[in-house]
Length: 91
Image (cartoon, rainbow, N blue to C red):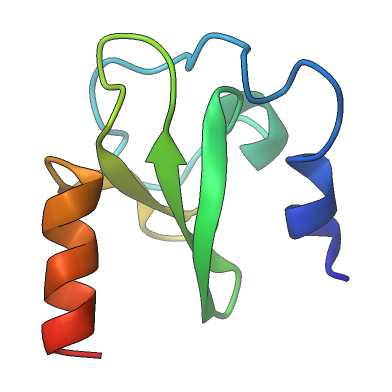
């Protein structure tokens, strides 16, 4: 199992407060580990890019994409249902 997926299983990670209220659209100056607290991995898109469901804080329920090297951490869907429906219709 990949390390990124394993980290979500560490005690307290999923319940920890999600640290962002606004997207970080450029390169991330912090470690991805710091920014993904309170999120659950949904999918890996390759090249270190992951989709995560925010579980805590004011952005709870939103789906964000993290690309720590170039694309930052940005909101891709206002809710899990919307994201999942689009994924089913356009895989």
